[in-house]
Amino acid sequence: MAWGGNHALRKRRQVLEVYGNICWLCKQPIPGLPSADHVLPRSKGGTDDIENLRPAHLRCNISRGNRVPKMKAQLKTSTDW
Ligand SMILES: [Zn+2]
Image 1 (tube, rainbow, N blue to C red):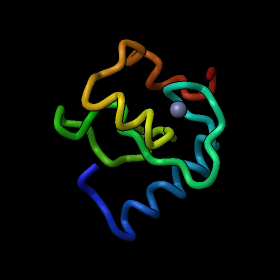
Image 2 (image 1 turned 90 degrees about the horizontal axis):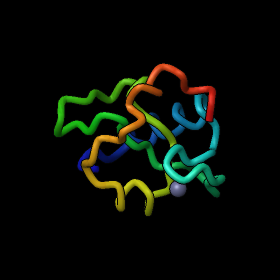
Image 3 (image 1 turned 90 degrees about the vertical axis):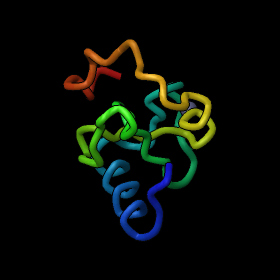
Image 4 (image 1 turned 30 degrees about the vertical axis):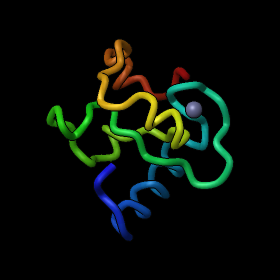
């Protein structure tokens, strides 16, 4: 997560508003402001658009690293988790 500052904070608030505070990686509630995880990592061409971001625990975000999840097909069905 090389992006910092107010831009990142705004994105994290937006992620919280759109997706709630459930970690998309472990499905557990996130206390406080979630970290914004990239569904498709930026190193693989992912964007900072809200559609490519999901709330995640910082530890889940970090442990996931740059792997692209197998559930990529769920990208457009953000409500079924
Ligand atoms: Zn988590």
